[in-house]
Image 1 (cartoon, one colour):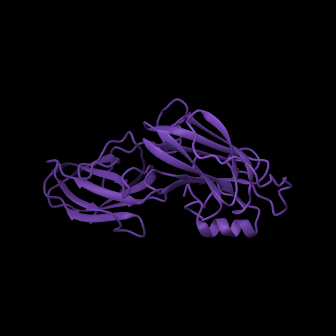
Image 2 (tube, one colour; image 1 turned 135 degrees about the horizontal axis):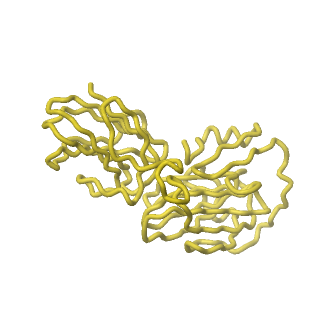
Image 3 (tube, rainbow, N blue to C red; image 1 turned 90 degrees about the horizontal axis):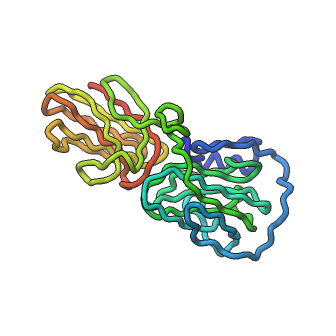
Length: 284
């Protein structure tokens, strides 16, 4: 998964090997098996609970802050508000601990996390967000370390496209069409539009089909709980699915009622999550 590290793998990394995983578009440095050689930052400091885009603020992780929603580790919850879709860069720097960031969407779902995406043992997440209140969980790789840190949240270039905004320069371009027998990668974000069934954020992907075609549509994503809606040429919703494939992935099979251009709305069960996915269209 580009935006996440599995719980088992992260726990394994804590106890042993000199490895690290990169999340999203951020870079990553290797973790050695030796000591960090950092100072204890003390147990006193000012709690940080909110930050605005464009600001840098100081906070302090301690045992009274709470625990993050991904690993249940000690972390400080810091909220920021977005009034539109944009890409943000979130950086946590600390001399007291090995910084670790978890980003929670307005829906409560964890959409990104990072260990060493900035320099040294500092963390950075670059991620496209939609309007709403997000929570940055500022913690440590060790899971129980405490100390002072600096947090910066700022708008940045969209990680899907690169600095000039041209699809293909970055990691995840929008997907707008697919044909039988293909698997393509797309990216759900706040600029895609909304499905006709629930008015949730979803990416519209068109394909041409014939009356009587039996089709299977599969959406796989490690970044979100996939949800599919199929719209007929008439505008009617003819099928939808949440978890028809493995775990949080979606798969639906249906017979097309008419010939024409159909729209697959590739979205999320939460309704507002964003991230990459793979879409497969088959005639069965």
